[in-house]
Image 1 (cartoon, rainbow, N blue to C red):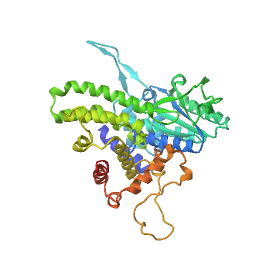
Image 2: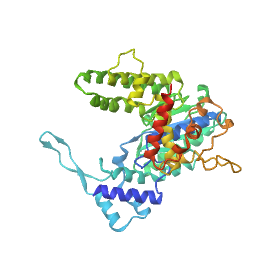
Image 3: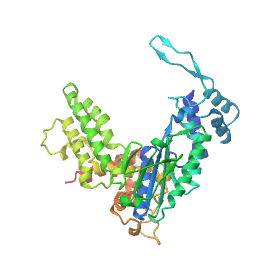
Image 4: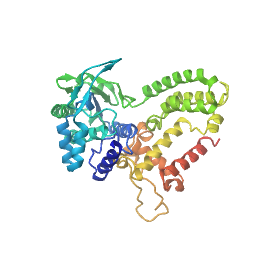
Amino acid sequence: MERVVAAQLQAFLVDTDFLDPAQSGFRPGHGTETALVALVDDLRRELDRRSVSLLVLLDLSAAFDTVDHGILLGRLAGMGLGGTVLQWLRSFLEGRSQMVSLGDTCSAPQPLTCGVPQGSVLSPMLFNIYMKPLGEIIRSFGVRCHLYADDVQLCHSFPPVTKEAVQVLNRCLAAVSDWMRVNKLKLNPDKTEVLLVSRRAEQGIGLQPVLDGVALPLKTQVRSLGVLLDSSLSLEPQVSAVARGAFAQLRLVRQLRPFLGRSDLATVVHALVTARLDYCNALYVGLPLKTARKLQLVQRAAARLITGAAYREHTTPLLSQLHWLPICYRAQFKVLALTYKALNGSGPIYLSERISSYEPGRSLRSSGEALLSVPPASQARLVGTRDRAFSVVAPRLWNTLPREIRHAPTLLSFRKALKTWLCAQAFKD
């Protein structure tokens, strides 16, 4: 029953476009990767404008468990739900209890007067509805935000000489704190982190974000949605961490090799190693060769493990045999897949807004080719912007694709044709 209601509620939210456009949690076509691609694209473009950015990662305590039922039901009524539907949702939330079981002993049941049920398919959607007003409050201060369920990130950019801009951020943080308090959500200032993104570390001198009277120190590295972001957006700490973790998993899998067939071994490697390499790998597009090599070494070791090849055996034929795209091409594949979704209405609006169709001034042969407009060089002066910002890289990569791939009728056919084409590019030598 919950799944039926969840499907209908999801369709209603899509049809009415009710959720905050910056909310990426538990929405079709959205995810941690799309949220991070948008966030990092914003930060890279601001670096190119010589701006300083402060990224604030708010920490909430047990957010799903402190949702006020009355406030949530009021939001549901405000979005147009009523009658039997609203009564069903009320019964879904209220009248629940909890107990602790240890061995054969159980505690007395205690009523649950707040929170959405953990593990329910409905709860994430209800929480997104509950959080809807927050994005509007943040943007009213001219501060950008990116949301993933209870993961709230604020991004404020300004010229380095405008030190008073941090006061705007502090007023925004105070308003967010007030809203959280009214809505029975608890902020943890001591666990809230702030990343300084700038060309020079000294540009952070004199910038002091404050939340509930607690001074928030500026950090040079934070973990956002599972990805390590650093002040220069080099992603070197992230790549190094992924490579270390993947090699550790490979060492464990190698011990299982005598007991597994090749197919089973490949499945384990994909689950424990390849999945790590591919998580949010759209951010890896344009990585310097020295940095990308750390991930490429992991992929080569995984290919040797599955095929049983010797350590010194050349790995390019192995990757071709396994039909594995090398690391840099996997990143391009992901960026192009996100671009296809953005162009065809199956991706977040915050990504589709970053790319636009190329419109020639007069009738040319390129008309009707589904090409995209590439930002001019004046808007992408830094290498990190030209080679790595989604809004710059996506159009350039898209325009290099053969016409038949750009016009693929479905995402499945696009991905299949794209992988075949990229494999031909990667292994043509």
